[in-house]
Length: 133
Image (cartoon, rainbow, N blue to C red; front, side):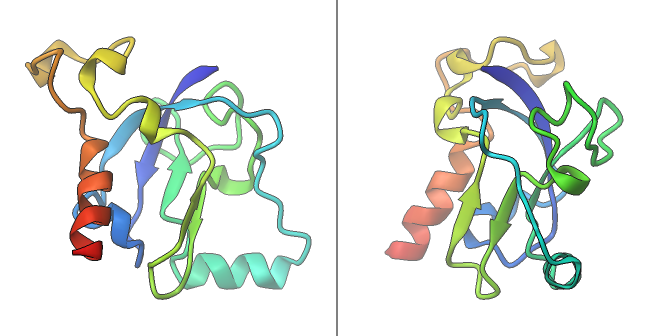
């Protein structure tokens, strides 16, 4: 299990609404979760349609394929994919494992947050609840 950084991209993903542009850390715990696109045309279409809402990134916030930043070598740092209408999100890292600050092994002191409070990932789950209401 590794705590990796991801960048939230502009996309139709309903669960990530309002999180665009954020760089957040998230637990990654998978050995088989590498995104694979056997057809370059399909992959390019997915990218062009902004259906890759989350990408593994390096310390500068740039998408990367380099380990340890990208834990599984997914192309262009793909960490999630969504449907064109934004209702479906398939995500390889595990934000459910760090939606509270005490689940973070480290965060900048500049965040000045309550260790017992919510992490920025809680927004994702609030967005899902809001959409279902």
